[in-house]
Image 1: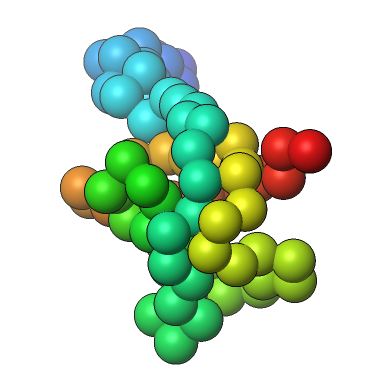
Image 2: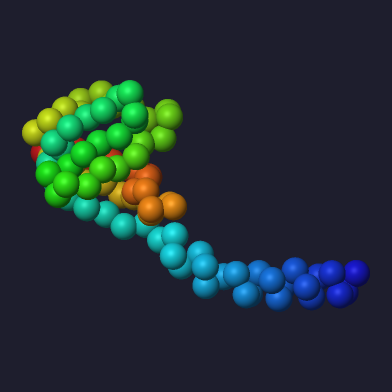
Length: 86
């Protein structure tokens, strides 16, 4: 049992640097395109951000300025949170 716990702790400490690659980032820009079919937003910076399935697109349209908090997963920018800038 001690060996099992020691192995788990060693594995966790080994993999902990990997979690630093999944840190959240943010960007402030204006929406250029809203695509509800592919659940994505394209901003005026030219980048596309993927929304989760339960994402609420109410009030989002081209020309709205937003702050998007996202995490990069498998080369895709996945939206964690979004705020509309007044």
